[in-house]
Image (cartoon, rainbow, N blue to C red; front, side, top):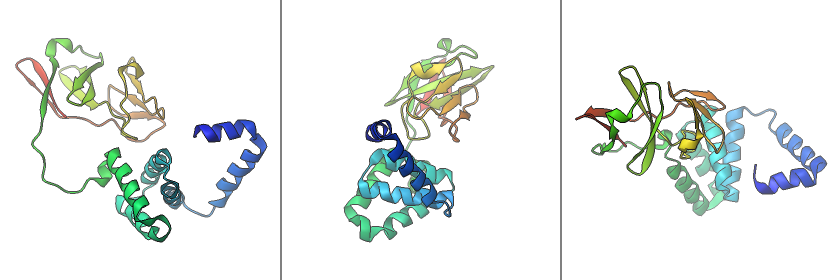
Amino acid sequence: MSDALTYLTRARPEAMAAYFKFMKGAGTHLDPKTRNLISVITKVHAQTENGLRQYLTRALREGATADEILDALLMAFPALGLAKIVWAIDVILRMDLPEFQLDRPAAAPTWHDVAPVSALKANVPRYFACGDRNVFVFGKGDALSVYDSRCPHEQTNIPQAALTGTILTCPKHEWVFDIATGRCIGKGNRPLNILPHKIERRRLLVCC
């Protein structure tokens, strides 16, 4: 919720309660995917980036495909205009969602020297820099898992301070992950993104 809506909810609780009740009831006969697609259009019309990000991921979660989202934007062209549609696509591309990746020749992998193997301890999560991002590393027995620190929800970079034991909580929308498995165990429904890795000359190399 935006700061403005939070303020109005506190300053005019009865009026805002009626407003939210109306909004909830207005979509009673729509399935969740359609409701969220409509919300995507309204956020693009208002050019509200946070709202677009929120309802885009909700639409995907409810089963909308990338093609359906693009069709919804293009069908709303008369109301949105090309400039707002282009603005929306720029936001979507910055989110780096796999659903919107077009087929393209695979780039040569870039391997980064992340840490010595001696810095890795079994069942102890570690946090390292890797190129222009960060990674979480968890070792279990002889197996290693390397996870992108960016949340799969909206690509928020999750800091090391968000880790308690093996539980990682994204500070933006409180998606909760288990570093031991990479699974999302609270609020969200997507696991952490796994990055390729290898050991060479007692060094951990990660492709990112």
